[in-house]
Structure formats: C-alpha cells, structure tokens
Length: 395
Image (cartoon, rainbow, N blue to C red):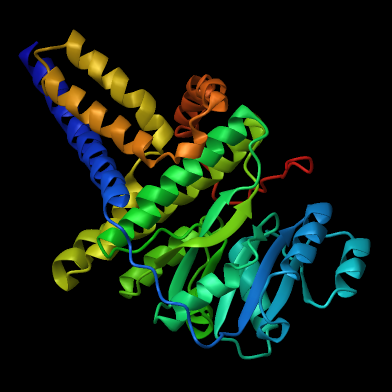
C-alpha cells in the first residue's frame, strides 16, 4: 500500500510541476502584455517590394474573393506582386484568375502540403523582392497591412507576424475560435515581445525577408505545421520574430464542430511530431549556446491547448481535495488554477465580453472533451494533409 501511495504521489508531483509551470507562464506573460507596452517602429521613409503568396487548395469561390480583395490593398501597385498557388482548382477558376493582374502557379501533388506549394511558387518567382508574405485562401488584409509590415522591415526586422483577427463570429464555435486566436495573439505573440522573445508564427499573415524566406522554406518538409517548424528553424538560428499588432489580417474562424475537430487534430498532430523531432535539442541549445528563445519555442511545443487547461485545472484541484495525503496540497493546486484562469481571462479582448460569450462558454465542455479525445487519436494524422473546409456563408 505504501508503494502504491508513493507512486501516486510521484505521479501527482510530476503532473503538478508540468501544469503548475504552465499556469505561471500563462499568468506572467498575460499580465506583462497588458501592463508593459511594446515599442512600435516609426513610419518608414521608403517602401519595400513584396510578393504575396496566397495558398489555395480547392475553395474556388472563396479564393476569387480573396484574390480580388488582395488587389485592392492600399499600397503602390508597382511595389507588390500577388502569386496564387493553385492546387486542385476548377479550370474555370484558373481562367478567371488569369484575367486578373496577378500570377497563377498551378501545382499538382500526390499528397498536397503547404510547404510543397510554397517551395514550388518560389521556383516560379522570377523577380527580386524585399520580402515574401503568406496568406491563406480565406485571408483578407486590412488596407494598410503592407505599410504596417514595411515599417518593421525598414526598422531592421527580418521576420514579422501580422495580427490575425476573426472575420466571422457567426456561431458559438466561431466565437470560441476567435477568442482562442486572440488569447494566443496576446500571450504567445505580443507578450513574448515584452521579454524580447520571438512571437509565434501562425502560418498566414506573416512576412519574411525574401532571401531568408527561400532559405528557410528549403529546409521545411512538414506535412502539417510548416509554420511551427519555421519558428523552430528561425529561433535555432537566433533570428527573432517580431509581432505587428496593427497589421491586421482577417481570417475565417471555424463555425462547425466537426471542422473544428479536423483542424485541431491536424494542429495537435503537427505539434506532437515536431516536438519529437526537435524537442531533445532544446536544453542543448539553451546550455551550450544560451539560446533561450529557441528553448522557449520548444517549451511552447510541449504545452497543452488552453481549452484543455480550463478543464484540467479544476479537475486536478478536485482530485487534490479528495486525496489530501497524495501529492501537492490543494492550496497549491488552487493557486495554480487561479493563475491559469487569470492568465487566460486577462488575455481576452474586452470586445468579447458580451452576450455571445455566455452562449459560447456553454460549448466549452464539448470542446474540452473533443480536444481531450483527440490527444489519443493522433496516430497517422501527420502522414497526409488534412484540409480544413471554409464556410462560404461566414461573414
């Protein structure tokens, strides 16, 4: 019986260390992002030349709208070039695109991935550009997006992640997805810059110096999570990622629970596989090269989604009440739980505190159990590209 109790205590101690450090991390970064301003670059006196890659897989109608929108960006027309990477599009869609003042690169893969598509587009980009920008098929940039990014480039930044915001909040799931995006924007992008750490790259709405973009993309072969692998490669080379909070990119949020499930499965699988590939190098980079930025990136790969923490922390607190003689005292679990909730709630923008938040919150138990079950269903998910369909009616 003593051996069982000892094992149970060790297990609870390990779980508490893992979750407790995570709760403190959320708490510190979330509050720091609210209390400490991040310096913005001054308005640049010269303009960079951009190539904008729009990755398109099916979704013809959405692409035509996004392409037309990209052409209206408020920036000198001779200073940016749009390249559509067309994968599995209808012939009539290709024909309509070719009538627009943009480049179309058709790609054909047995197994499509975003990294393959981007590398193929790079091969077909003949002009010299200062920077490359990547958009998803549903992304719509704010009119001043390129000017905002340009300010960071001219200030000396090599990699800049724009501020991706929700295009739609038409369902409770979409509201939760939008809130999740903004929580991540605050904690893992804006707040990271407070401590001079790299903002997490999302995969769209980001810009890189063009020569660097070509170099980094040539090293990426991830089926899913090319953005996460990009962040790891960059920080390992001690290249920081800036966050342009005012460079807005509108992104469609998932409205359907089943689509949400597919998307999160792809994300979790990519995160797990990249952690297996790069995780062991984290401590080595930290101790041998003092590369805390890379170590921090690895740590972010090892943590659970925030929605799981919302359910796990109260559960572990309850367990500590029921088993007072096993593991950390319930006071410690209570402190960690409070830190976790404060960290997440503080990161939610004020505009989301409305009547829609209540109905959205009622979906949290369903989302929690969906995410929890996905942790045990990741086998094979990173072997083939999982497409996330978009809602044509979202607005």
